[in-house]
Image (cartoon, rainbow, N blue to C red; front, side, top):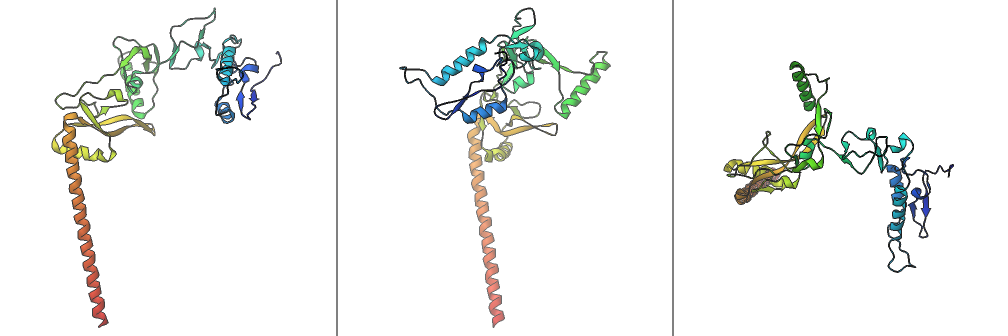
Length: 318
């Protein structure tokens, strides 16, 4: 076992398929970070597409599930790594120095004298803006669990950071050229509930549209008209009839360090939906009649031109 340097082990089955059994034979399987994406793709191409059972046992469980349970038990009983590199990306244990910027240990329970933590209490953190994009808002009174340096993803955000640093320096505060932002856990958030529509007036954000990143952010008393071919018609008809409407912003597209909002369809008051749809059908019918009259006029003009051409040819022949 001292000379065991196996990296990957594949077992062949009686049906011609294979499965990964590295956890059974390799030494320090979880501590050496063998689980690569390319190896997962290779194994996915050779595993069997069906399950095997133990035919000599009545009501036996899936044989593949038994092997997976055996590998899981071996992983739990393997023990703690003895090197610093073995803790990196370890599925059970973790060093605080190996945590990503948006991760934190909650609660921080140490194992032994060294600051080694179980990976199970590691949770992901997000900014208040990112939580809002998932339809959640920070609960009142909650403080950030972690402060990190803010990154300038877009040009406008970089300008905001530069302005913040400039204002801080002019006020006598030391910022070291960095702007910090808070990160919050899922337990510090609650479901975002927008205000319902009042008097058929849709509450909008500072840009004149509404945030609709997830279905739970939909306004009460409103209706969503999700047809692409109705997008411009609804805007024109609602503006003509004097109805309030708003474009739904469902996300952002990032191009050349700029964030462009993704506007999809329109949101109107539920009381105005029937009037808008009826006005649209009437306008569409009028447009079809105008198009039909235009086509008829073009056909008549072509026939006149054709008959005049025949008359000219007949006159020349005579």
